[in-house]
Length: 219
Image 1 (cartoon, rainbow, N blue to C red):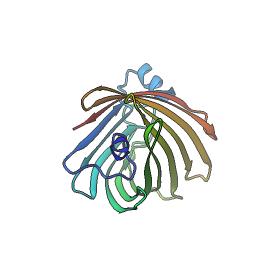
Image 2 (image 1 turned 90 degrees about the vertical axis):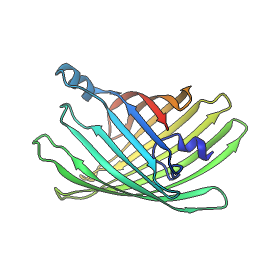
Image 3 (image 1 turned 90 degrees about the horizontal axis):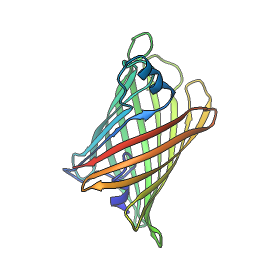
């Protein structure tokens, strides 16, 4: 179950020392279509992490946020494994720092502390995991922080495919609460290379929808 969960980005499980994971995820939504019409490049999201030691995982997370190619946000983060229980529970803490570009070209600093819990399980259908990733985000522009919590259930079938269901919730800086559903399937293409097909749609105070076709690399 740990190996299944490690195949996915984020979560509380530390990356094995000396190993890495990277994901390149183009995204099709209203903003990416607008960028294409303007002739701007679009990459969606780039995520990478590396096991620096037995308990420390470090990485970067960058993604486009608007209709212009210069609308982006990026974070460098460090995640520390805090505790593992006898029943398979794992808890980790994370701290990320980075920048967020804005329409007036005034970049804002970001600070994102987070806490994650996860547990692996096994069953007749295959091995899987449950996790909760919670974080708060502070920006130097001031104002109230934003809060996020992602609830994930994953299953690796006997055939090797991973099926993932994620509920993404947030309390934005303006106080509005939103939620999205994001189911996905991950298929192995070759040793260390996987492909993820994901759709996401807002279900509360969010009318967005997107499709992602990502490439996962483990090394």
